[in-house]
Image (cartoon, rainbow, N blue to C red; front, side, top):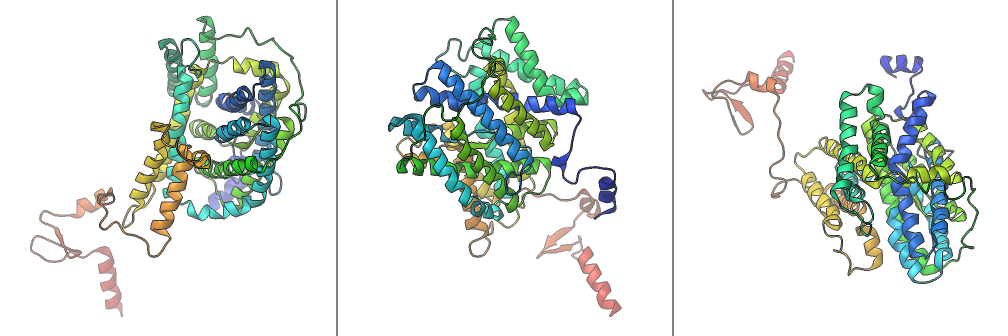
Amino acid sequence: MSRSRSRNVAAGAPARPEDERLKAWPTIMYGIQHVLTMYGGIIAPPLVVGQAAGLSTAEIGVLIACCLFIGGLATILQTLGVPFFGSQLPLVQGVSFSGVATMMAILDGGGGLPRVFGAVIASSVIGLIIAPFFAMIVKFFPPVVTGVVITAIGMSLLPVAAGWAMGSDPDAPGYGSAANIGLAALSLGLIIVLSKFGTPAISRLSILLSLVLSTIIAALIGMADFSEVLTGPVFAIPTPFAFGMPTFDIAAIISMLIVILVTFTETTADILAVGEVVRTKVDSKRIAAGLRADMLSSAISPVFNSFTQSAFAQNVGLVAITKVSSRFVVATGGVVLVVLGVLPVLGRVVAAVPTPVLGGVGIALFGTVAASGINTLSKVDYRNNLNLIIIAISLSFGMLPLVQPDIYDDFPSWFQVIFQSGISSATVMAVLLNVVFNHIGRRSTSEGSVVASTPARFVSEDVLDLLEEGDHVVDGRLLNTQGIEVQTVRARAEDDERSSE
């Protein structure tokens, strides 16, 4: 252990950045900030699935409360952890949107929500068994892959932010109006102003303060509606199997198992991304523990009327912006989610935050995730390899379903589940190309590749200062204007060594 690290440990500093403990009030406030950041994302899947299942407004409300409750418990498990379960990283858990299309397809086949819940339980148990084997592929996630994945996460989430900024519901009046876009711009502008001119504490809470201030302004101008806050029960504990006992169908289980594999890919990417942001060590054991937490939460969630659980990528951006890497902050956010799940009245207050406000916040958050990925890619070695083409093809492939959402409409449903997600598309392609170019046979060089023919080159200014007019390189040797070789440091050292012998 180094002398400086010994001093830090002796002074009570945490051995890992994510183990930092803040005072009670900042911990609570940052935790609430995490909840507000992902709230729109966690209620969207039960809202869509509930509508597809033909549930009433009250029943959809129950479904949303249950998803908040389970998401909170899953977050606590993922952040605090128990032996073999939980990555102990600042990751917020919630219902994975990647399974929505598959669950709607299961509903179309008949059987209702019980058939969906049965498929989630069975596929999650299988996922729990195979999680350690999936985690062993972490060696295939070097910076050239993780950088692509993190960048793809940020870019894939930007359409979500755009949808929020426009008003979320295309059928609602005012969708895409100047007022909605202006409200999103206001929330984004407040983040910029608070980050630039606020104290360090205010700067770190810029997301939360922007949400609160923008919502107040929206209420004053009639763009936020709190009239439904007191409608419905104040306190309600999720009832197990409220929509009936689960039923198990082989076809539905197989289709959900594909979703589980996609969830594995996305959660692994999120764990690697937050590890990069926090600057902490992430190995295969830690990934396996995180995936097992995902699967255990997913297997139990249908008992309380919820669905597959996964890490939320948008909260990685919040960690990057605030620089608050404490997992205990996110665990506190998990407690808040549990409270929202048993106090529907508080959930209705949070639900009253206008989606355009979330849109402006999302632009900052998701853009930060993409920027973190670009920062990772800046550390990749591009000399004498084809890493540049790996990045180029993987990112382009990942963006295809974003720029052309119907590109895979004629493909089988299992293919759409995997490749309709820009995150999983980019991840699969980056892993495959990295294996092909950097692991199979000899390592490929950039010779003959037009894509990799012009990598960025850097020369130290100190070297330039030593060069004189007329110096040139011939056959790898540096010659002066008279053609006499200028010795390099290595060559000079070799001459000195021979002389001493």
